[in-house]
Length: 160
Image (cartoon, rainbow, N blue to C red):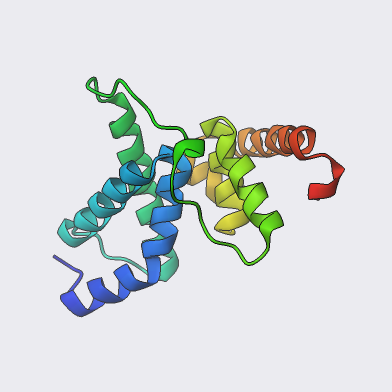
Protein backbone atom coordinates (compact mmCIF):
# COMPACT_ATOMS: atom_id res chain seq x y z
CA UNK A 1 0.00 0.00 0.00
CA UNK A 2 1.46 3.34 -1.08
CA UNK A 3 -1.14 5.56 0.59
CA UNK A 4 -0.57 5.81 4.33
CA UNK A 5 -3.45 6.43 6.74
CA UNK A 6 -2.85 10.17 7.20
CA UNK A 7 -2.57 10.67 3.43
CA UNK A 8 -5.69 8.53 2.90
CA UNK A 9 -7.65 10.66 5.41
CA UNK A 10 -6.48 13.84 3.65
CA UNK A 11 -7.57 12.48 0.26
CA UNK A 12 -10.96 11.36 1.58
CA UNK A 13 -11.59 14.77 3.14
CA UNK A 14 -10.52 16.60 0.01
CA UNK A 15 -12.24 14.47 -2.63
CA UNK A 16 -15.39 13.02 -1.04
CA UNK A 17 -17.60 15.72 -2.56
CA UNK A 18 -16.02 15.40 -6.00
CA UNK A 19 -16.32 11.61 -5.97
CA UNK A 20 -19.90 11.66 -4.67
CA UNK A 21 -21.05 14.30 -7.19
CA UNK A 22 -19.42 12.38 -10.02
CA UNK A 23 -21.05 9.14 -8.86
CA UNK A 24 -24.42 10.88 -8.55
CA UNK A 25 -23.98 12.27 -12.04
CA UNK A 26 -23.44 8.80 -13.49
CA UNK A 27 -25.72 6.71 -11.24
CA UNK A 28 -28.52 9.24 -10.74
CA UNK A 29 -29.35 7.53 -7.46
CA UNK A 30 -28.21 8.70 -4.05
CA UNK A 31 -27.80 5.24 -2.58
CA UNK A 32 -25.91 3.94 -5.62
CA UNK A 33 -23.70 7.03 -5.57
CA UNK A 34 -22.91 6.43 -1.90
CA UNK A 35 -21.97 2.81 -2.65
CA UNK A 36 -19.79 3.82 -5.58
CA UNK A 37 -18.11 6.51 -3.47
CA UNK A 38 -17.34 4.00 -0.76
CA UNK A 39 -16.01 1.47 -3.29
CA UNK A 40 -13.79 4.11 -4.90
CA UNK A 41 -12.13 4.94 -1.60
CA UNK A 42 -11.75 1.26 -0.73
CA UNK A 43 -9.97 0.77 -4.05
CA UNK A 44 -7.77 3.76 -3.24
CA UNK A 45 -6.86 2.21 0.10
CA UNK A 46 -5.99 -1.10 -1.57
CA UNK A 47 -4.25 0.42 -4.58
CA UNK A 48 -0.57 0.24 -5.23
CA UNK A 49 -0.48 3.27 -7.51
CA UNK A 50 2.20 5.88 -6.97
CA UNK A 51 0.35 9.14 -7.45
CA UNK A 52 2.28 12.02 -8.97
CA UNK A 53 0.14 14.83 -7.53
CA UNK A 54 -3.37 15.71 -6.35
CA UNK A 55 -4.63 16.11 -9.91
CA UNK A 56 -3.51 12.54 -10.66
CA UNK A 57 -5.40 11.32 -7.57
CA UNK A 58 -8.55 13.21 -8.62
CA UNK A 59 -8.49 11.82 -12.17
CA UNK A 60 -7.81 8.32 -10.88
CA UNK A 61 -10.76 8.52 -8.46
CA UNK A 62 -13.13 9.79 -11.17
CA UNK A 63 -12.01 6.98 -13.50
CA UNK A 64 -12.72 4.48 -10.69
CA UNK A 65 -16.17 6.06 -10.19
CA UNK A 66 -16.97 5.68 -13.89
CA UNK A 67 -15.86 2.03 -13.88
CA UNK A 68 -17.81 1.28 -10.68
CA UNK A 69 -20.96 2.87 -12.11
CA UNK A 70 -20.61 0.85 -15.31
CA UNK A 71 -20.22 -2.32 -13.24
CA UNK A 72 -23.25 -1.40 -11.20
CA UNK A 73 -25.40 -0.89 -14.30
CA UNK A 74 -24.22 -4.16 -15.87
CA UNK A 75 -25.34 -6.16 -12.84
CA UNK A 76 -28.13 -8.56 -13.84
CA UNK A 77 -30.04 -8.16 -10.60
CA UNK A 78 -30.68 -4.46 -11.27
CA UNK A 79 -34.27 -4.34 -12.43
CA UNK A 80 -35.49 -1.10 -10.94
CA UNK A 81 -33.72 2.21 -11.32
CA UNK A 82 -34.66 5.28 -9.35
CA UNK A 83 -34.55 8.45 -11.39
CA UNK A 84 -32.93 11.63 -10.16
CA UNK A 85 -36.34 13.28 -9.88
CA UNK A 86 -37.39 10.67 -7.28
CA UNK A 87 -34.51 11.49 -4.94
CA UNK A 88 -35.16 13.09 -1.60
CA UNK A 89 -31.70 14.67 -1.83
CA UNK A 90 -30.57 17.38 -4.12
CA UNK A 91 -27.33 19.35 -3.98
CA UNK A 92 -27.71 22.63 -2.20
CA UNK A 93 -26.82 25.77 -4.08
CA UNK A 94 -26.94 29.34 -2.92
CA UNK A 95 -28.82 30.42 -6.04
CA UNK A 96 -32.00 28.60 -6.98
CA UNK A 97 -31.17 29.12 -10.67
CA UNK A 98 -28.04 26.96 -10.27
CA UNK A 99 -30.09 24.29 -8.52
CA UNK A 100 -32.65 24.29 -11.34
CA UNK A 101 -29.89 23.95 -13.93
CA UNK A 102 -28.24 21.09 -12.02
CA UNK A 103 -31.55 19.22 -11.82
CA UNK A 104 -32.06 19.64 -15.57
CA UNK A 105 -28.48 18.48 -16.26
CA UNK A 106 -29.14 15.33 -14.23
CA UNK A 107 -32.32 14.64 -16.23
CA UNK A 108 -30.35 14.49 -19.49
CA UNK A 109 -29.23 11.11 -20.84
CA UNK A 110 -26.15 9.84 -19.01
CA UNK A 111 -23.72 10.39 -21.88
CA UNK A 112 -24.64 14.09 -21.95
CA UNK A 113 -25.01 14.74 -18.23
CA UNK A 114 -21.62 13.15 -17.52
CA UNK A 115 -19.69 15.40 -19.93
CA UNK A 116 -21.54 18.50 -18.68
CA UNK A 117 -20.82 17.55 -15.08
CA UNK A 118 -17.13 16.95 -15.72
CA UNK A 119 -16.77 20.11 -17.82
CA UNK A 120 -18.73 22.66 -15.78
CA UNK A 121 -18.89 21.28 -12.25
CA UNK A 122 -15.47 19.59 -12.02
CA UNK A 123 -13.61 21.97 -14.33
CA UNK A 124 -12.05 19.43 -16.68
CA UNK A 125 -10.98 20.36 -20.21
CA UNK A 126 -12.29 18.43 -23.22
CA UNK A 127 -9.07 16.46 -23.62
CA UNK A 128 -9.12 15.42 -19.97
CA UNK A 129 -12.78 14.37 -20.21
CA UNK A 130 -11.96 12.34 -23.32
CA UNK A 131 -9.23 10.43 -21.49
CA UNK A 132 -11.41 9.88 -18.41
CA UNK A 133 -14.38 8.59 -20.42
CA UNK A 134 -12.31 6.76 -23.01
CA UNK A 135 -13.79 8.62 -25.99
CA UNK A 136 -12.34 11.05 -28.53
CA UNK A 137 -12.02 14.75 -27.80
CA UNK A 138 -14.26 15.58 -30.76
CA UNK A 139 -16.89 13.23 -29.32
CA UNK A 140 -16.70 15.15 -26.03
CA UNK A 141 -17.15 18.45 -27.86
CA UNK A 142 -20.10 17.04 -29.81
CA UNK A 143 -21.76 15.77 -26.64
CA UNK A 144 -21.21 19.13 -24.94
CA UNK A 145 -22.76 20.95 -27.90
CA UNK A 146 -25.78 18.62 -27.98
CA UNK A 147 -26.21 18.78 -24.20
CA UNK A 148 -26.13 22.58 -24.25
CA UNK A 149 -28.73 22.55 -27.02
CA UNK A 150 -30.96 20.21 -25.00
CA UNK A 151 -30.66 22.45 -21.94
CA UNK A 152 -31.37 25.52 -24.03
CA UNK A 153 -34.55 23.88 -25.33
CA UNK A 154 -35.65 22.90 -21.82
CA UNK A 155 -34.71 26.08 -19.98
CA UNK A 156 -34.91 28.66 -22.75
CA UNK A 157 -32.49 31.51 -23.37
CA UNK A 158 -32.54 32.65 -19.74
CA UNK A 159 -30.31 29.83 -18.46
CA UNK A 160 -27.17 31.10 -20.19
